[in-house]
Amino acid sequence: MQGNGESEIDAVAPLDQAGPRHVAYCASPRYRSLIPESAAGALILQPEDAELFPGNKILCADPRVAFARIANLLHPPERAVPGCHQSAAIDPSARVSPGASIGPAAIIGADAVIETGVVVGPGVVVGARCVIGSDTRLEARAVVMHDCLIGKRCVISPGAVIGGEGFGYVREQDGHWLKVPQLGRVVIGDDVDVGANTTIDRGALGDTVVGNGVKLDNLIQIAHNVKIGDNTAMAGCVGVAGSAVIGKRCMIAGGVGIMGHITVGDDVEVTAMSFLKGSVEGPGRFSSSLPATAADVWARNVGRLRHFDELARRLRRAEQTIKQILSGGKH
Image: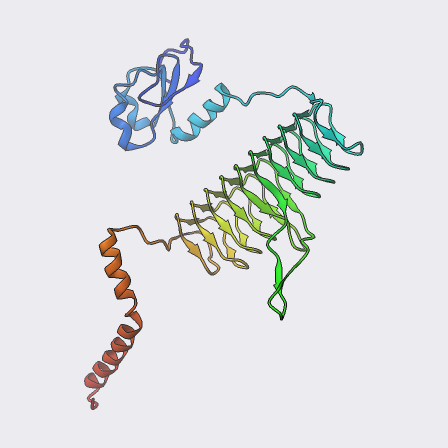
């Protein structure tokens, strides 16, 4: 750090809105012009930007990481008061730590285990025989179905459903659909975040497994028997079909679709709105989306797409003719 070590900082703020008691950061060249004008009490900067700011500064290779650590220190999650709200329904066979906090209208099923420091928010449902690891937060209206295991220090956001019935059906000869019982569990590791209204289906026979440190955004669908490796992150509206295996440290952008029964290797990045139909090895970056364009241009391109087969056949015939000419043959 460079500057006055006696300065008091008690909050974080954006670069262009920070005041004398705020800390802000700049990690992108597009915002460098804002640095000299900032009124922040301290700025987190890359070393090459140090001369742009005369005030207090923290220099590091990745200001975003430093800012996140400082923000967590200055704005820690509100600590819940241990105890059970009088409106909570807790099965007598459940084991709830005295250090846990059980909110209004929460339901804890038979033989469930709620470890110390767990926060069970308003309207949360924890099914029979579930285990919720220490210091995990189940926020309002989250549902954890029977027999699921959730590790330590996880955050399950409002409306998330862990362990719901997977989409398992077989079609009978008369056309009717017959439901296949989903008999597995969901097993979630430590330090996992699950976004609002995200669903993780239980396994059909084995388990659906989410590794340590995985971060799932809002509105994600994880189907039955999917395996997600440690420290993988997925943005909103990703859909992963059944029995897909996703490696460690992957980054899956918003709206990506991942086919069932394929394998995605470690350290794979998939860009927004892409579709993975087959297995891919990592490390690597994969894309398949078409960016939007003017409607009249798109309409013309769609018209041309209809003729691709014909064009391909004509091209093959032309190639064959050229080969015959070059080889001295007749055509």
